[in-house]
Amino acid sequence: MLMEQLTYPFSITWTLSDKHKYQIVKDIISGVEYLHKRNIIHADLKSPNIMLNQQYRAKITDFGVSKIKTTLKSTVAGPGNAGTVRWQAPELGDDNVKTSKMTDIYSLGTVLWEVYSGEIPYAKLTDDIKVVWARARGATLTIPLNVPIILREIILSCWKEPEQRPQVSDILKVLQEQCSTEK
Image (cartoon, helix red, strand yellow):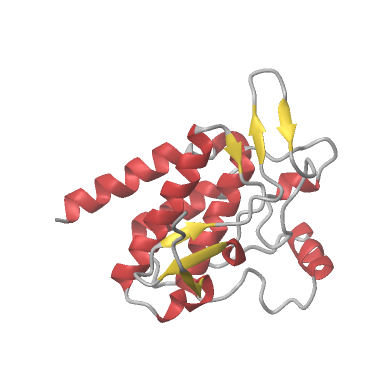
């Protein structure tokens, strides 16, 4: 089997051109759409689980806690509230809330934020418990000024309440429409 070499960690994105950043954003959204169309919930979407190839194309990795949603129940390959605190949807801190496509969407918004911010979420906080406390007190991420307006709107929509978050196919459609109107 021929394997693609994934050379670069996601952390280099802040040094890339806007054209490369846009392609990375599109690749990540397309990857999540691919998973969700197959009823796969990644459950731990974050920048350390995204690698770039030599052409700076993004690939989602690490499906260790992913799960497949079936029509009756979900088959869980990892904990029901899996994820990493800095990227995790806030509702996963509640009892009886499990990972879902909408929790993936929240994490997607945070990953898109990272492409332009060049830092991990809540980077100044030294450990995860401090992140939990800060978020419980209302701390939010500030969207950098260099984020294009359409991406700012997408990120903010990903961070809404679960029932108000868009489907990933709608996010990709908005991004593609915006791109076609700019040409």
